Amino acid sequence: MYAMENVITQQAAAISPQLLTVLEQKLTMDRETISLCLNGMAALILQNTRDYLHRNDNSLRLRKLARHTPSFESGFLDEALSKFSPALLTMVLGHKLKNLTQLFMSFYALEKTRVERLFSVASAMVFGLLGQYLRQRSMQSPSLKGWLDWQLPQIAAAQPTAVLNQLPALIPADPAVSRTGSLVPPKRRIWPWLMLVLLLLVSLLFSLRGFSVLQPMQTNGKSDVTYRRLADGKQLLLSQRCVENLLITYIESNAPTSEKRWFTLDRLRFDTNRTELTPASQEQLRNIVDILRAYPNVEIRLGGYTDKSGNEQMDQRLSQDRADAVRMALVKMGIGESRITSEGYGSAYPLVPSDSEANRAKNRRIDLRVVEK
Image 1 (tube, rainbow, N blue to C red):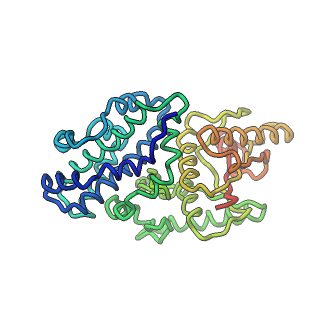
Image 2 (image 1 turned 30 degrees about the horizontal axis):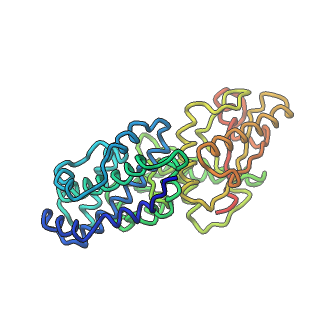
Image 3 (image 1 turned 120 degrees about the vertical axis):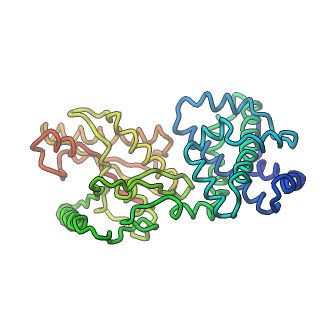
């Protein structure tokens, strides 16, 4: 079985004094800034490569390109410096590469070309190491995805948090949401307060029955989508008022867990009398997986509900099957079984009257409660 050192250790060792001396001369930068940039960029590339492997079931092209990437040597430096955004770097970072370049430019007061060249060098170093692992691993060794998962704590700890903390200032946020994710009064808009009062009244009604359902608020034609950074450095593109954002804010807060605090996963949908999630449910399901990965101490309970179109015994069984189906989907996507429990509640606690197909679809749902955080 091929054994390899921690990839962060290997990457740091590749930034040798000799390499720093050459880069110092070629980029006319101080070596300390070069070292900080390369280490931070390499950690970001590793994190996003790991995320890419989890998002894409068929990652053959990435693994093929990485396998043919030679181990980084000083002789490749001129090529790396002259070729910004090679295929693998573009593949794993995508549109985030532009934003990350701006963040490093701002934090270290560097010109764009210097940051781009450093990203190319970091890319050559990282994918050289991943290529070495792929070429030398045995059949008993973990897959590339499994190997990076095993090292996730070290990769997350190496993220350039000081650089990334500039993100709210560089990516416009909705004026109605503070940088901490807490709602603050919107300017010159009165009707959202009326909706908030209505939401509180509905939550109070459900709390009297043993549940408090948090629903994402809707905007009126104005986009409030922005990036939300998780504890492991991963960023999700979310509406500020979507249920995932509310869930993250709650997990990160000091608020104690409560049996009455439930979050409705409003985009997990089922057809009538079916336990399979609809294809449109996959986006929110992936978001929940990313959140649970970022906060490994969190344990959750899933509650399944039906639309009262059958008898109570059938509804109870169907709701349990739906909750179990979502639990198994999360487990198959890498979340530990011990972190998730599930229970069916039949047609109890409907969100809306089941008097139309649209309303019945809303009542066929899954709610989530944080048990531990």
